[in-house]
Length: 300
Image 1 (cartoon, one colour):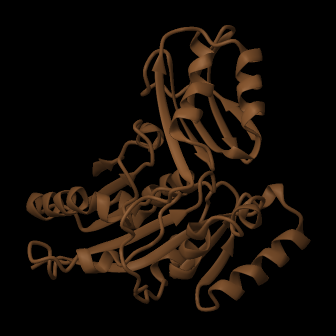
Image 2: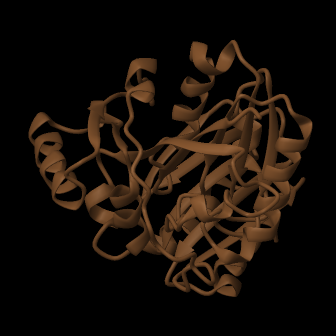
């Protein structure tokens, strides 16, 4: 009976998980073997799966809650059972949503239909060099992900000073002193770092529900969006908008927009998304209806 190696990828919203995932998928250990991928998004739109590069892997999407939440347990078991039934994958990578509180996924892997078919080889946590300390004090999931990690990837180091990175390493060691830490830009890590991970199970009960303070809305709309109205909407939310990602059909052209803690970046649109605006916004300490109203105003 073949055992499938499992790597879990976590990290707070906007840390660079999907970029890191693309780098993982290019590694010889995955690119030259049969592999499977489970992508978990918080929100109704699969933006991350549209960004993941094509490759020799089967992909499963779970987008109604955190992988590490009892609300998606059935969907996750179904995906894992399908991977076993297909009989092709040698390696499985699970990209958890940015708000995941890492529960005991290994208990799920021991369900009767799955027992003995998977072995977790490493849990990787991507940390935003700029924004980690902003999020950690008020969002439990941020520290939980670090505590569960076998390897910590400090990403976006080109946006932080050496002093900031040194202080961040000290903070991370205080949370988890056993994990190996590596610093990088754009999620570039070596295969040797991944293969040398020493996995230790993180025992924690599955969360019953998603965090109450986090809400998400997704939109798909063909109408043009005024840049002025978009800026006003984002500014009105302030710190309550923790993440925004997707295509926006501005009056002067389509752009892929990302927002992390107030920092806005634009790039060429993602072709796999719909022809009009297609994005997900994630808020903190704001009702779903309140968040929805703000972005609905863009299309009125």
